[in-house]
Length: 120
Image (cartoon, rainbow, N blue to C red; front, side):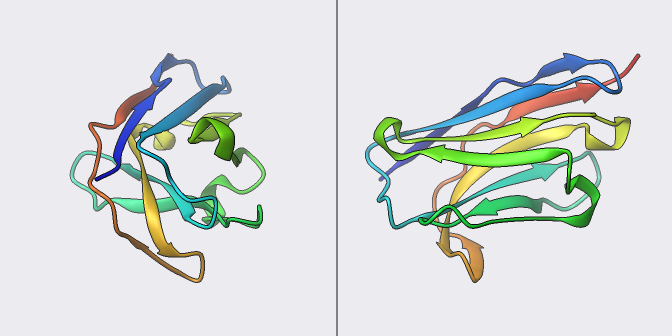
């Protein structure tokens, strides 16, 4: 089974940037859609961004124009570039393989996530 390992989180001031990485140990198919999720304390996990095998992307409204999802299939890695971070972006961020791009149900095992804290 593919294991997903997220990294790149940390403490950043409002307006700052972070780049998250998700490395799959075991190959992910270049045909797999991938997604980044986040979960804040007391809230449900939500899909923040997704990317298709062909590079199509979609975002939730609150991060559009600030976050960018990308992938490097050769490295089995998915990235999330987060700019202009806001305190409400603080959460644990996870990645997962999606059932498909148009039916973005996660189908892999969850990793440990990476904590993003936005505070001055």
